[in-house]
Image 1 (cartoon, rainbow, N blue to C red):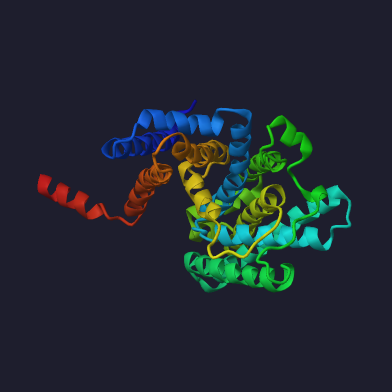
Image 2 (tube, rainbow, N blue to C red):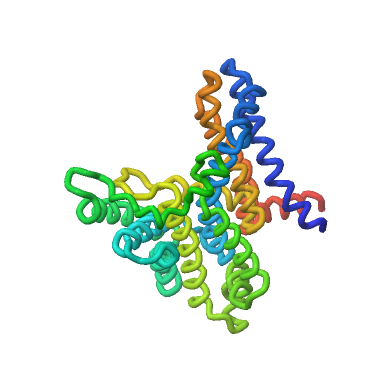
Length: 359
């Protein structure tokens, strides 16, 4: 393994270890047994066929929203629109299956997934166009778009899809469900579904895109230096829009798969889906590496699914897992904060002062 690859693993591994240590210290302070609780967490996430199925299923949306964030990040943009893009993808897939339920199963599923992915991509592309042509901050626009789509979807579900007096759409037809009887049988009736294999295939495609295609190279070049990319003949505006489109496509696909494989309908909600924000954390932990995202998603999924078992097997509140996750994100974030400070030259003045003192 190359030295660079080893260095890339240090920060994530140290961050994960530090997060678990923080969680253990807090448990000790409040009189809980950290060793027993971490054992319960492991059992709850990977201790049986059912729990493994649930953990793998939970990875699907984490992988796809993380990949979406990573694509935008490689282009130099902080796409916080994952929750909204995931939500509109979920909505698009459910609408397609309800309106075209007469289609054969394979066409219905493919159409629903494409509809969800395209919905997420188009919604994300709005922020890309604003950034490319008007220089509008993608952070601000994606946050605003998140809440716009939340209320648009709520309105559409309540007034269009749901029956009178209900806040939920009808369930999709069984032939559109990605959680088949075969998968239920081999995973002890878990919600594991074919979307997991789709997510892994997408990981391979994203890796290939960035490492083997001209467009993928251009996205990374723009992320490193827009001016130099423009000078070398790369259309920066076009690349920005493509990056945001792909980013939204991936998040939208995550929502579509969850809609077909997990929820089977869509309901009015007061909050944005947390998975969009969790996907950002997964991408940051994996340093935006597509392969690393799979392992980071496994960790986060195991924490989330296994965390439910902590309060079942002991009197420890399950929120301790949220603290562990937050601590991991915090320690990963320190690295990114330091890199930003270096880029902005915060340490140049101190270095000059030291050199001056040495003279």
